[in-house]
Length: 291
Ligand code: PMP
Image (tube, rainbow, N blue to C red; front, side):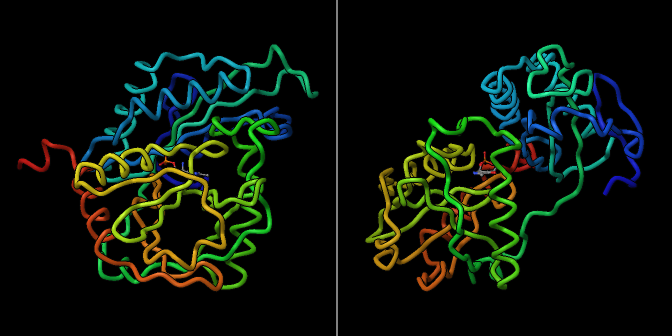
């Protein structure tokens, strides 16, 4: 992945993709003092770019550091990099981390580095295939109490248990894993939020100990605009047998129907299909839609 052509924006400059390197004594690597974003560009425009940039800056603030660029600077670097990379549909990965000047838990004076990379990562284009739904396992690890970890930050450290859980699920042939939270309530998948359908209404866990996804909020708005009731509440795993549909939402996942979670079964249906379609139109820039 590090030997590609193209460029990466690295601390204010465009550098060759292969040369965007850091030292092994980087604090972010040893102590997970890093925050990142995941964004998607559609038809040459990053969907909700400013919201993502603001979340990146806020994630850093929660970890105790100041991202040394303004939201305007990061947005224009992103747009310029997208243009230079020449992609119209792409995935965008900004990251900010503490550098290698000092090694130890405390690294007050280490430089805060920022980089942005953009690569092609097609969204799932075949709607019929998508409507079959993916299979999830139940993860062993749980999302921690917000008093135990900074849940509102998209912090690299919070992904350690996601990678473990996703790898364990994949080893058993599943696409992903559903994580419960420390109370045993349904929380989210390893890189996406989760929704359920029952009697024409949508139910989703309250985002009180995991990332309140930008896609999650978008899909809640889209559903309400359709007149579909959305209930944010505590959901226990025992309730899963009472739901007819299930889907995941996230920048990478977009709206992805789910057919199985461990022994529970769902049938992707009308509400999932409507939101897959509504989300696809929502992310299409109005300019492109008008062409
Ligand atoms: N939860 C986790 C753990 C994630 O990694 C993501 C993807 N960023 C989400 C939820 C969904 O967030 P968003 O819709 O902002 O991409």
